[in-house]
Image (cartoon, rainbow, N blue to C red; front, side, top):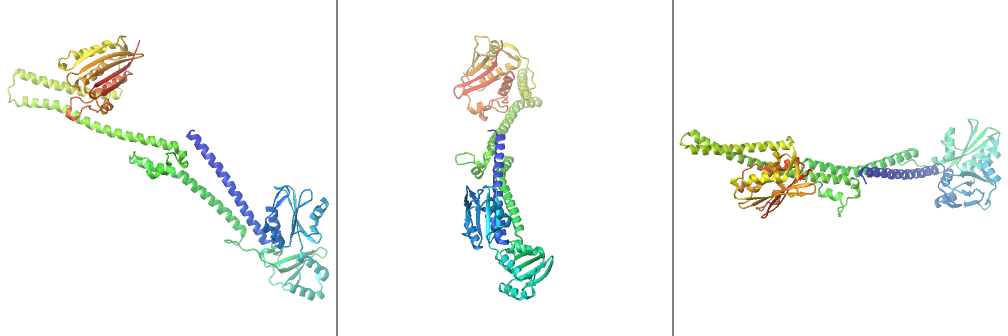
Length: 576
């Protein structure tokens, strides 16, 4: 799979997983907040909160009801009964129900209960659930003894809505027994107060809060309204304060908001740390690699510690770094290439230094000879015969010719390097071309220590070459075979024809070359002799030969065995 596609799939998968994780976290946070809200409801208003909690957490599956045992226990402790009615009107679950209650209800009965909020002498709270489990009707019943008592007192002791004067002591005694008090409002005015009210608050909203959220206060209230006299009786009696302030904030609402915000921040922080570690760690390794590359430490891409982080024992990339597998491989290849380049540069520098030493030697030798003869002639101390002067002139000329040839070779090398030579290719019979080159060496009387042979091709192959330049190739190769081999060596030149190519093969049975010499034979600055066997020449001949052959679209190959000889093949494309 391509790197671009894998990165796209990786980040798409990560996005989906992160989205699922965030969704699950959101659900978890929602459940946590719902539990907190339920707890708050139970703290503020025990009865209403308990009913709301039960309708929220009850699980109903095909008329099978699952309810937490502690909630059923709380119903019993608060003397509340519960029935759950299905859409057919049948009771499918009941808790703490009296024996007098019906096990099924008609539509009329359910509508009447919903309107009057009464069953027998029980006050009823109802809840209709239509969310997850279908249509179910919750009935919660309990005795509101305080309201029943307050209603009874109103009918016994009041006149025109207010407590009669003769009944005040009797009602006061009853209130003292329960440590309670009554406030009587006509309209918006407080008309009467019976019993010790202490520091009870009289503001309407405060009274409503005490009624609907009794868990906030140490006293509770019960209310009776008489529309006929526009009178409201409010009974205050001791209660149990179940609400406690939040662990850090006075309001549990703020506490829930803080929990939600902090949880979200922690989740975001964890995801950021995870992403930073997952994607920052590989980048840190690459930065360390670049620093080592800047210090030219190409032999060490990763340290041993970093390598253990990236690779398993069997050499496979660990899952964390698998996304960067191509990048790591590219870095490895680049490191190897830089290392090879560095080694090659060092080798070239070493070869160049050796070449400069050789050049200095090659120039110093003829210059020393010319300088020596110049001093002899300048001193006028020696009477030279005409023959001696002629010999001196010959030596000076030969040394000068050699230096001119050396300088021409330098110039030719740079011309070839910069492709500054223009070839004039013409069809040439390779048999005749190679034969003429061999004949030239055979006629040289100074080369009697070696023998030459020529074998032409039977097909008379032709190639497009520039004879002026290509003869330089044959001359350099044959001259090297003469110079670097012992007396008695046989040098054979053969022209071959294979398919669309022709070969000019120059072979000898001399001392051969080592592998290192063959690998560096065509380097411009390489001299294929050691210092103990120094010969004249700048080490440029074979480099020039290779450049000229390649300019002709050909190829040069060298095969050599130490002690058996060397073969050089020149491959050229044929023409019709």
